Image (cartoon, rainbow, N blue to C red):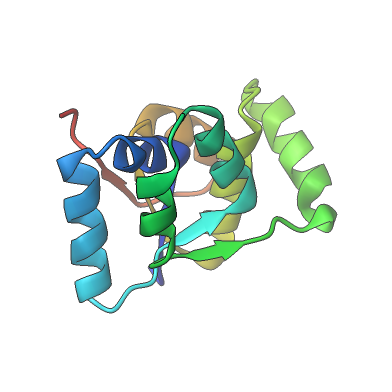
Length: 130
């Protein structure tokens, strides 16, 4: 495992001031890990929040990466294979699996299903309900 990617659920919870999301983020930074947020995940998070102040603060400690157009066919095939319509989650899984990274998530079952459709293992840190 070479890094940590955040899913949109974690970003939304952080934007709402969730203590568990912020504690995970702070522990990650203290360990010298720069969390990764893909642009589709970021778009999905912004769709769910009204005030971006806390999210913008969290993002200052993250690496926000564009999702390359050349990866679009692979995302489409993954969505078809997994029978999912969650574009952001599919993009996240593809990027994290390629990077051999873990994902901090609020929805491990959905990500596990997508990773399974790839035939890949995906290490996850589940953010507890809080």
